[in-house]
Image (cartoon, rainbow, N blue to C red; front, side):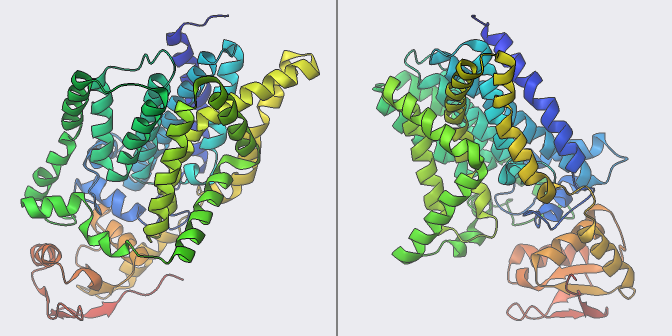
Length: 480
């Protein structure tokens, strides 16, 4: 049965997007959250609410779209509006992954109905995994990482098949540029794709490379929004992108370079083992063997060009995990999870064929194919459900309500700082209270921001972070 490509694409969207969006909506956090890696949700939601700049690299495209979501849904808590955007992006990423997986299976001779079931089942399984789900039911810019990774994975599937009938180089470069403008770590997909093309035996084409480079430069244009946003002097921003040096430092995350370590070989090996374990956990008990089977089948048939892409990407992401000691570094493994999806789908298609032959009934085989996503749903629903979580926003409301008049609340930890910034800046609660994080007082841009917002609460000592003020200075209480 030959199904036109346009119909396959539509089926991937119909089968995956609404179902996942409904699940994500049912588990969506009502506001900001500290759970499931959501500490930065207060930072991201605040920047989107007031059109400011969140933590490096600034996420200009996500912030602009998030601001539109807040404006379009004025009756909602701004963080919930941004959370809805995250849910939509994560569901769309799963739909694109389903499309890529379906195409890979059909290109390998799998019948279209089986390919569509296997591709959709693989995408649903991944999208209901713990790490993926964490990007879907709270305000986080990493949801866009998922979508860009899925788009580049689909491009890889198209380019790395024997026919090599991928999108035009200009479009490929544009998507890669947009991904880089969102987060530079997504550039790992580019050398991985290059290794896959080399494994396929493709020769460099100067004209195609030139068009891809032009598209890439066009895709980087969201970076130009950073100095324009900062020039408005918003109530909330990180860094000073109005100067060339400050703009570059924000994009490359200069403030986070101290987190790049030099682990011993033993420590690096331990972190790499942790990365492998996290990938295996995300694929789930069904996904791991199916991906291995799919990889073996593909390697045997087409010299393993897509396998080379997926495994080299996993190696690059694993190396980043081993050397970067940020608290949310596990989220940067998600592009590898996306890239392994089509391999799991091909293995799943093989398992469906086996089930149909053994069970003698296509409907029973379909039930068999639905086991992996159902298992992922059952395993992760309890931990992923944030629908009743109000700990962070209740802390911020309570702390601001209890603060003395015109107080300066001083914090030195991300959880209380981001929550208080959100409540005071995005929600406008207690405008008489100044929320200050002593860790940032060594930065010129932060002292300038404080001087604009709170002219009577000025920095006394850059080292100790003390505040000289005619206001009462009180420490923010630690979260309970």
